[in-house]
Structure formats: C-alpha cells, structure tokens
Length: 449
Ligand code: ARG
Image (cartoon, rainbow, N blue to C red; front, side, top):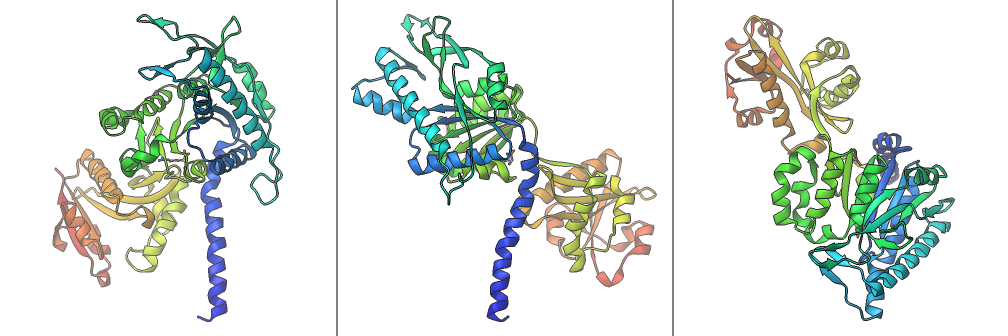
C-alpha cells in the first residue's frame, strides 16, 4: 500500500469511527429528548478543570433537549468555611447536626457555589464546548423542609427533612429551557432554612418529578472501582441478591445503591452512580450501551427474546461475515422471514448483538440449533452459552428430547456445552437430504430430557 493510500485510510478510519459513534448514540439522543434527568453532585474533590468539563457536558445534554435538575452539594466549600471558623461539625451516625455556625458556613458555601455555577454556565468561549451555548440556570425556594427534630434526646437543630417540592414552579422553570439548580436545603413555613441530605433530596425530587433518570456523581467510586464490574449492572430484582455483598465490599456505596434501588422501585427507569474524576463520565455513561459507571434499572438492559420482524435486517448483518467466509450456510431474507418464529435475538438496549435459531423436526422430534452468532465485541462473555441455554429450554418445553448442531468451526464450544460427536444417521431424513456435503460439517448432539 502506498503511503498516500495508507494516510487516506487512516483518516477514513477516524471519520468512520466518528460516524459510527454518532449512529450508535443516535437512539439515545432520540430517547433522551425532553426527558427529565435529576443529577446529584456531591462536590468534595472536584477539581476546577473537571468541574468546567462537567458543566460543558451538562450544557451539551441541555442542547439535545434533556431537561435537567441539578442537586448540588458544595461539600468542599462547606469544609473550607468550617475550617476558617475553626468549627467542628458533630455527626450522629450519618447525619450531621447543623448548628448556628454550621448554618452560616453552609449559607456562604451555597451562595458561592451558585455564583460559581452561574458563571461557568455563562461561558461562551470559542474553542470550548460552550461556544454558542446560552444555558440559563434557575434556582429558588422550590423545596419546603421541616426540622428533623429531637431524637433520643439529641436536637438536630437546622438539619431538616423534605416536606414538599413545588412541582408546578419547577416545571415552569424547566419549560423556560433552564437548568434548575437545587441546593441541599429547604425552607420551613416560618421561613427558616433547613439543610437536607443531597442524595436523598435528589432521589425524592426525581420520584416526585417523575424523572426519566436519576444520576449520582460521586467520589466514592474511585477507591473501590477495582472490582465494581461485578455490580455494574443490576436490576431491582438482582439487587436483592447482591445487597449484602455490596454492604460488605462497598460500604461507602451502599447508601447510594439503596437510593438508586428505591428510586427504581418507585418510578425511575434507570438510576446511575458515576465516578467523578473521570473525564466525560456522564457522556460515556449515557451514550454508550455499556456505560462506565453503575446502573440500577427496573428491567434487564440485555435481553434474550424471540425475534421480531424489525430484527430481520440486524440478523442478516450478523450472518453476513460468516456467510462470506463460508462458516455458515447461506440464508436469505425470505428464509429468515419464513422461519422467524424459530429465531431468538440478544438485544442490548435496542441493539441486536447475537442471534440463534431452533428448528423443530416434528417427525423425528429433533431440534436443530443453527445460526448461533454473537457479535465479535460481545464474545467471550458467555452470551453464546446463554442463548444456547435459552433454546435448550425452549426445546425442552416443546417436548424435544435431543438437539443437534452441524458445525465446521465451533466443535469445541459445543463439546464444552455438553454436546457429543455423533453420526449422520441420527439426523432427520429431511436434513440428510439437504445437507451440503462439501462443507464436511461435524455433527454434534445433546440429550436434553
Ligand atoms: N447509555 C445507557 C443509558 O444511559 C446504558 C448505560 C449502561 N450503564 C451501565 N453502567 N451498565 O441508559
């Protein structure tokens, strides 16, 4: 390949990647339009650079039509103020007791944070993602709170509890295309401020406002991120089994999990817990199927389900490379359309990443597993085995006693999955007639009774 051709290809692959990224993100862009996200940020070690990037990402979300309520806790500024005043905050378990000095410190911190955020959202510098942006940020007395009161003799002073959220007023602000900023406080009927737990407030606001998503941006992940892959994707159902494990292994995360889970048990479809010193965390989580953080959802995001007519073109494109290199026999659109009821697909958030087919030979009561494909980026994760199990179950329920498969390249995979090598004579008569002998396929069978 000449140099110039290679360069051309390299350039091409960059733009191809960009186009591919846009296309794979497009379903999410459609889906998120006009949806409400409640985003909670507990800002402790948020570096100034990362805060700027985060604000830019939020304004991008706003630009594509996402409505945003930002529940922002300026923990770092609060700590700074406490230090300045030489004041030590008293905690009872996980709840701080906000006394008069702490109240003053919080008021200063929240005021500073608000000005800081307003100024960041007002940036329009060229060469930044904020060029041309014109995002308004609205904050106000949207939250009514009451004192937590006296428990077991301890007066929690200005630490409060949520009483009411003004849905109508917040909706009006959102309709103005503004981002609604809610600090972790609410006012009582007497006009006093009471301070609330940021994450709890975000969860309550998300449920009350019937948000589409609840997102926690937290520093808690960093320290424990080495093994959170095991809990990256949970449903409210699987959370029940992992709860103890999470409590033991990720004690600092367990409260966020509880909130995410209870939000999903309520009205929220998906709740996310994201690490914040990761550049672009929110974009990577929202616009890729795998995400980078933790997600608790009402239902499985990856599903094996019967194929539907809309899946046919995806099935064809899964088959295509294997048909080309001769691994799979030829099947055309008509063929798939006619036998669609025999197909299952692996659906990852609307994208088809695998398929398989079970063909029932009624006379001999045998089932053939064919067309079992997992897209290359989904391989080595047990997805093929899951689809095989799904089809074996389906075969069993139809009363099939033995399943078989013909393969040229996946012998070992089938053996690992309990198949044994067999001879041609076990095949249904109809299959023997249509077998493509030049392929020299191996025959494997498995008893599933
Ligand atoms: N982008 C999708 C969403 O925002 C899926 C994210 C998956 N995230 C995960 N941590 N597993 O709903």
